Image 1: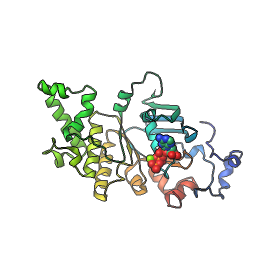
Image 2: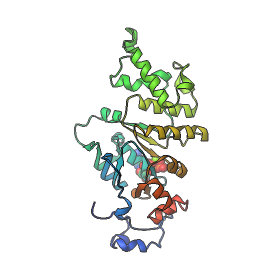
Image 3: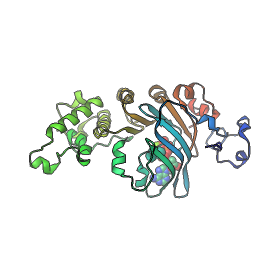
Image 4: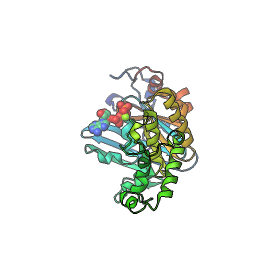
Length: 310
Ligand SMILES: Nc1ncnc2c1ncn2[C@@H]1O[C@H](COP(=O)(O)OP(=O)(O)OP(=O)(O)O)[C@@H](O)[C@H]1O
Ligand SMILES: [Mg+2]
């Protein structure tokens, strides 16, 4: 992008980039009105991006929820998405594995690449895409099945193991492989020790924090490359939250993690880079997490981080 992205303000859009000086007015939401500068969005890192969005726009009917989002996400790291409610964080996250395709009103324009390949092109296999780019939601959503069946669900669906009902009736020929996947995934999600003696119990009998780690294990069972998490700890107590945070840090050694959070301390603790979305569906600043939290360029970002609005 050569042109700076402008806030959707007619008065400001006629000004030059020096207009960051004129940031006196406040918007209805309490944010200072200012013009976004391209340099606030440029983030240099080593290696090729794992994911990259370019000029990404999302409309829900006539509601313009995301405006021209361009950002590159490095591999094997944690990227935090922060910003006030309604600014488009979940919408952006869902663009990264085409979950918005499931929402009738959503209309996505622009580009998202995974390892340099466009995911919004005809012929992309969405099941395969979502296997590579897995997702964990805000509320733990285990299936009302056994712990084992929750983990084995994905690998069975993708044909990696043959242990479904029919296979079970004929002797479960991939039982050993299933056992390995179940153990490996639960260990990765730091849940194995708590459930290894109750794998055939219903997953709904687990605590909320355990259910969320089960959902992470279920996501890991299909060997994803990217894990998208939408406020994965917001419904959990501090101890369960800290387990999820430790887990995210461990996962980043092998996976690309993109996590939405409303918790500033959490974003600062667990992420390598942070993207700040603000009201109106704009990406305002993106960069190294320490830089964003310690010396943001944007006044609006500083106001948001210090709790002046949002
Ligand atoms: N399925 C939908 N249909 C219509 N509008 C939607 C839909 N999902 C989101 N929106 C709208 O898009 C905008 C962005 O919503 P989104 O859920 O992405 O925000 P968010 O940043 O994740 O908010 P929160 O922090 O509250 O989860 C909001 O104005 C919201 O009302
Ligand atoms: Mg959301």
